[in-house]
Image (cartoon, rainbow, N blue to C red; front, side):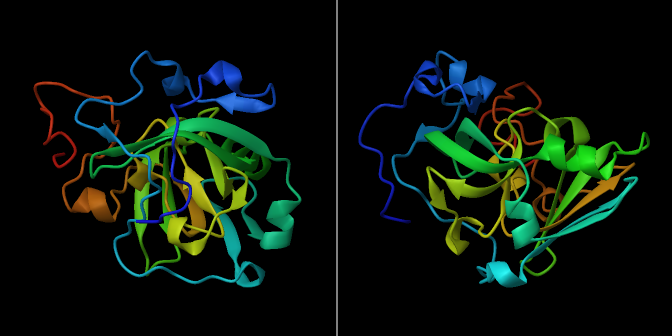
Length: 223
């Protein structure tokens, strides 16, 4: 667990953020903690395997698959793109939620508009630098207004422990869908479950889904 960025107060209401910040809709809920989750004031560090140490000068991001114009961006090119800030909560499948985060980076909508999404694209596969790790999500979730490719958290550069140089942030899905150490974005026509999904985690990963099919405590570990 990281000991920095410990939260001492209550989460800010969305109205407290400036006009330049995109507000994730879930922060407007009366209860911002999904069923089965508990709030943490820490900034936990969790990952499946090793933590890649990627120098920004060597980092590249590829956008490929069902796009009109495949892209390959260096760190300098990524930094030159228009930037956004997003206020969002962050929910981990291990049952903790960290509220009151400001993420900064490049809008997923902007990047995919630049690449040109083909009509046959329905899903996104995110590839990490960590030994071929992948996760899958519907294109519509990846293109949500509050989704971004993030290189800063609460005003500070994202370090390697938390997915730096760049990670995905898709606030309305569980955190494992927000791939750390992002290497490539691949658009595909058919769903392709990633690492955790193949191991039995729910294919969609919506932290607010509670139903008879996925009762609390089991809903994420089933297909």
